[in-house]
Image (tube, rainbow, N blue to C red; front, side):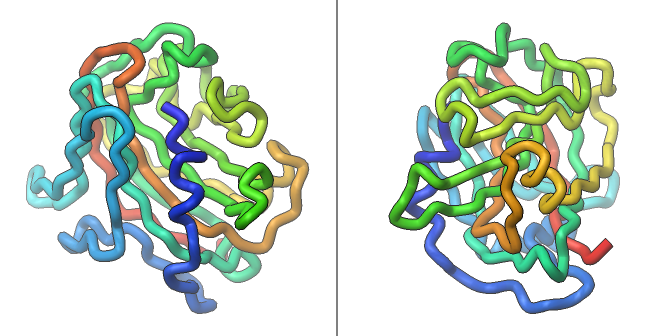
Length: 214
């Protein structure tokens, strides 16, 4: 689903992260979803806090739906360039050709957005996705947004269900490598579990999301 560019009009500055060693964006383990908003595109993916084995996380459940859960915030990447998060897939989703519009569904994705402002065509995004068709670290253009939205397989079909994985990405380095751009901030972050194009079901858990200096 081309959620990235449908969201861009919403990415006006809501707050600016202060310089520091850690900037918390998703404090799901604390039962805190303040600042997060939902944008529906096809139906509505359910995002709700859930407790499992004594730990709280955000559960996403998609039934042929696509809606993003997003946080509008300006992150100073000169201070905290490292994006950290954890996630797990609850069930396997095979949407078909993920390079085609009909297969642009993922059991879980985390994406960062550099807003182009009034020049919306200058907006750039990176989607870190849990892919079924692509091997880890493969990169391709989003079938809806083209080269402005790069897809990167952070996890693939070989990574187990119902298992937590902790991730770290240097957003500055990724933008330079994937978009050929040197950036000093991003304007928003979003997560999405979607299955509208394939008409299937999908479910995932998301842990805390935060930025660090290293």
